[in-house]
Length: 210
Image (cartoon, rainbow, N blue to C red; front, top):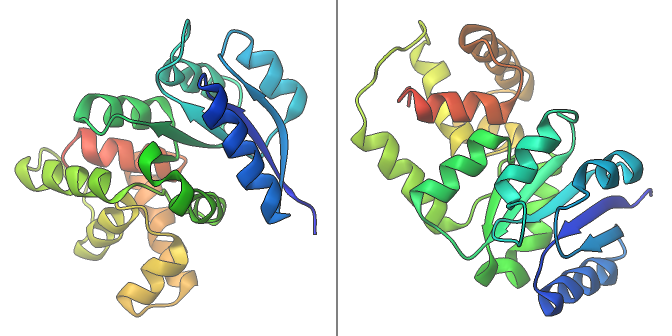
């Protein structure tokens, strides 16, 4: 089996080394490199072509959010999981709008990191529990501005997407086939004029669709 290729950006030396060792011990992952900042992020990502990037938010020089925005300008495929001590609205939503695929609090890394990487590679959007609760709270507090003619089922699926569920989990939750889920999601993307799950989720939250 070809190992999943990981790139790490984390300014804390101890945590950076711990992440590398944790991933290497599983035998499933190849840590391509681990950097203390994002000063040369474009050339590093273009040269090493990782499958997944673990990105700290608070780094010297360019922040993780700025780095994600830069990466998304030339690479829409790589999966990016933010690693952070922050669980406030501003950082979470800025990271999602920039193009992050998941958001993991550092205090959960030892327990959640491997599952989060597997989840993001199968279409999920992994988030720490407190982050998911905050997003749900934001959804519930905001009025609907424009529903884009989404059906009740499409809104239901969009909300499950926003909570980080993979397509397979959505199918199980709703008691429908995986193909049916994919058909609904294709229609959601068309109605929202987006091309990916993270764009759909960002738009749903930003425009209070769910």
